[in-house]
Image (cartoon, rainbow, N blue to C red; front, side, top):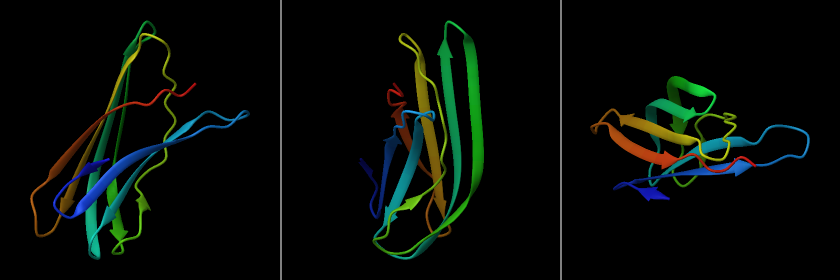
Length: 105
């Protein structure tokens, strides 16, 4: 978990026997807030390079975790994969959070 002054950000991975695994970044705030986000995911491996970009906004209630997006990333042995999340509140500057993609197998 990566903690800012009043934000906590983390990833959870949900596995299924019949569906691809899903990676979900979450955010929790100490107070009610409106956040805009940009999410960049880059995977590089034997099969080439893939990139996923998403942006949007979320309303966060104090103390309540909020899923920002839900995505599926298949990561094979030897692949390099990075998730970069940028969060912006109206009253603060942009915050950056960087994660290695969790294993999806």
